[in-house]
Image (cartoon, rainbow, N blue to C red; front, side, top):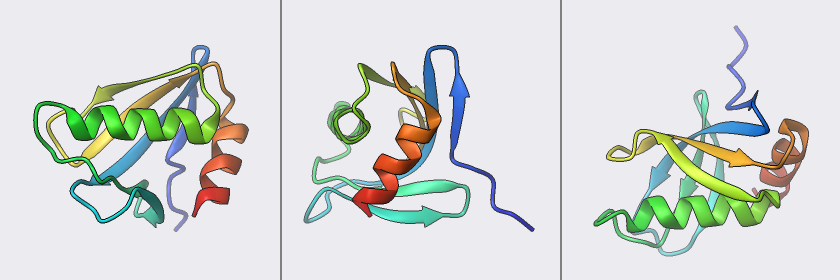
Length: 98
């Protein structure tokens, strides 16, 4: 059985399903974890710091115009919307990071 793609096209950008590990020693993409991309973030999971850090990291890594948490703001499993970028560009960027 094939693992679902964590990156999908929506509107003028993409949604990326991620599993966030806050309070990590460094910010990095770990790789696929089921149907999500596992990302370690140095920011703590308090007052939205980890959400902001993962959005900034994905936006910069993919070269997107913007990034927003659209689902899972209070959980480790999140969906991030990236605007102004194609699914193929995001896949290449996140693969190159890991």
